[in-house]
Amino acid sequence: MISNLIGFLFLMMTAPPYADFTPEITLEQEHFILDNPPFAECHASTIVETGNGKLMASWFAGTRESHPDVTIWTAVYDNGKWSAPISVANGMINDTLRYPCWNPVLFKTKAGKLLLFYKVGKNPREWWGMLITSSDDGNTWSAPERLPDGFLGPIKNKPVQLKNGNLLLPSSTESLDEKIWQVHLEQCDKNGKNWKKVPLDNTRFGAIQPCILRYSKKKLQLLARSRENVIVQSWSENNGKTWTPLAVSDLANPNSGIDAVSMNNDWQLLVYNPYNSGKNWWEGRNKLMVAVSLNGKTWKDAYTLEDAEKGEFSYPAVIQTSDGSIHITYTSNRKNIRHVVLKINDRLTDPAHHQ
Picture 1 (tube, rainbow, N blue to C red):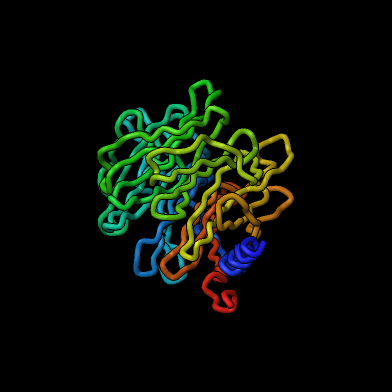
Picture 2 (picture 1 turned 90 degrees about the horizontal axis):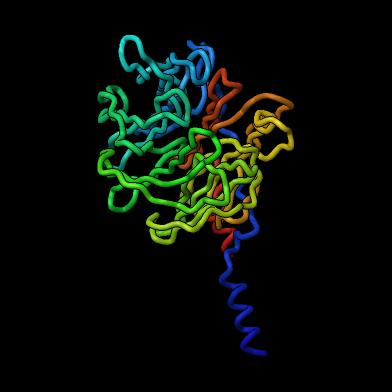
């Protein structure tokens, strides 16, 4: 009896005092990246910190999604303003054949190389992976390089760089008949070479476009959208070498793109569209939320980015910059890219919560 009481008191004393708290999130900035978009539609943004307080965003844009004139665009954020956008990659095969571009993903390695992955092809069932790189933070880019056959690179969301320098890339495929959606992971070295696949069991779900969260040196979590209107998850305890079978999370989602980031205060942050019971996919993209979690299993909505009666606010990308700010970009009605800067009230390092 006494030993049980001592054990209970020990647990109470050692339990994290912040377990019942949700970080306070406040808005720092919000604006469109584009003043006068030089294209009819844009979608699928990505964002990266390049250094010296600068950011770079990228997206695909053109007449409409899947039109051959769709190319990859970038813009630079410096001193609170976005530069005019420029087109940096296209799907030109020859003088008479051109394919649309899709889903760029920006990532800067620890060695300072900036990578821009993207896809080219008629549709997501037949596209292939491409890569351009920069050693001067995107001022100039290498010639486009096609990834090895069978490899697509990160499908929508940023990779994770492992301790050995390799990149762990969240990827997925869609079958030609559109019946099978399959999540998997890929690895390459820090220069985008020496590729290999990492399988994952997702036979229970139709899932695509995963993102990766880190909990410790070896513990990782994968989250992905699914046709089952729920965000699905998988876990790795060995730095991404093997993964548990996909399983449901406690997050409903209308089969819409998500992204997440592991923050520097032990919280995990997710940007997602919550589930809407509408019959059409776009009926669930009128609301966009930020959720947080400590353990990746229990999530709490913490901030509302969009809550409209109609409209599409989708395909978020999120990073935490070196100053601790959270930067989010997302599609705004396919006409512009929205950039939001949030500040997290870091309760985990507040001494008042450790008394």
